Amino acid sequence: MQTKTDIHIGKLIHSYLKQHGQSVSFLARELGCKREQCYRIFAKKSIDTDLLFRISKILRHNFFAYYTTTNM
Image 1 (cartoon, rainbow, N blue to C red):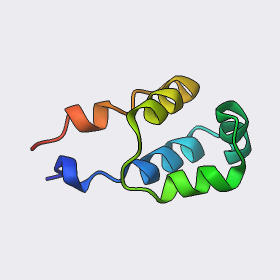
Image 2 (cartoon, rainbow, N blue to C red):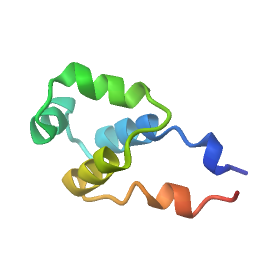
Image 3 (cartoon, helix red, strand yellow):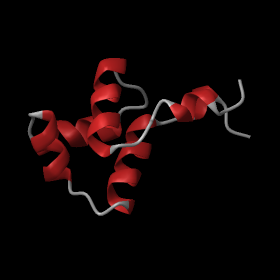
């Protein structure tokens, strides 16, 4: 069973990006940053909610749902 503390949001974002055929360059361009910064995001277990909201909008996926649908 996965708990909220087991979530690695960076890995989930990277996985979603790959599964949906979007490039890291695309995400970097939409976020207004360099690809290297995206790879730093992918390495993080947690990220700022504003950044997560922006990524959710760009990728049209609610990444917050991972936190609300797991057990505590």
